Image (cartoon, rainbow, N blue to C red; front, side):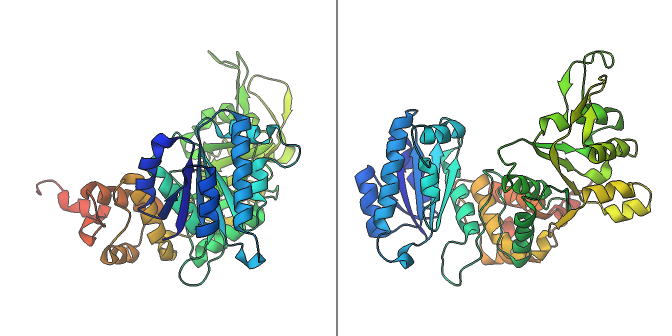
Amino acid sequence: MKKLLYYDQDSSRIRAGTIALSKLFEVSIAGNLLELAAIMKEQKPEILLLGFASHDYTFNAYHLDCIHRSILSARTGDEEDCSPLSIFIMVEFGKHAFIHGAASDSPGKSRLEALRALPSSEVHVIHPPLQIGKIPSIIFSAVENAGLPAAGPARPVFRCPFADAHSPIIGKSKNFRRMISQIRSYADEQRPVLITGETGTGKELAARSLHSWSRRKHNPFVALNCAAIPATLFESEMFGTERGAYTDASSRSGALEQAHNGTLFLDEIGSLSAASQPSLLRVLESREYRRLGSAQSHSAQFRLVSASCLNLIDLTAEKRFRNDLLFRIADFIIEIPPLRERTEDILLLVRHFCTQFSKDIYDIEDNALDKLSAHDWPGNIRELQSVIARACARRIAGKISEDDIEFLTGISRLGPGKA
């Protein structure tokens, strides 16, 4: 187990937090800032969890200064002593307010930037409302992905680029690392990206990662599911409407306006109707659009990321998708590998889903893992999530066994007339 040092301004959640954390980490508790400095120097933990509950920016800035000095003091000496450190900051009262406040009275770098500038350090800001029991899962996922030293050879570094407590990107397999490398490479490009992959592989998570690693990360990420938009509503959803454009129409912004200077994600773009495709093509060519019922043109400043589980080449051959639109949306292509081609990641995903669905189950027996690895996963990660949810519902505590694993193919046994 990795060493974790826990310090919290809110003493009421320390006991529950320690119980939850101790199932995955070797936990030490610092009752005050002096104890934190002493434990940092003596034990050199790999993970530092800090809980902030105060709204007083000056008070919090003081805490961050003391923590920064404690880390520097613990790392004095040889450069080789700078072992990787993951710092997790829980903020109760609004992440953006905290970050602004941490920098508000600083003449140079903010307190958070000073922590981020430490050698071999990663800083994650966690914004509840979250049950304290969910925090270990978030930390475990991020630390596993960050490649912190463990028994055996070091793994390539990967850090989940956005905070999504329920669906972080998780993996260490070769195919997974190749995908992450592509996402990193294309993140700061401005040209359109097409993400392909089977259903349930996590195409939207990849799109959000592209946004979060890009220079647009502080601007909006707007997602539209093309399969769920009727052709008659596409233009109003995409371009917005002016009052009176049609009966009962009110003035409202569309996805393009909402995604200004950010990222527009069009999921299942292969399902876009033939009537809607020319409208999208025109925007991509002219970089301008008009609200329905308006004569005024607006500049369309956004980065387009599209996704499809359908083969768009086949759709163009069948005249169901425009050739010229395909060339406009696919300057870069990222293929998300199916779960059956990244079985190394199943254990990490199972542990994450176990902590998501149960506060007691955190591991899985080898025979159950073998059963999962042998499955072909037509529903990919979404299917695995459902399988683990059912397994957790069958168990109260302990490890998930082979008998707890049930795939949807078993439903055929429950047909009419069968008990």
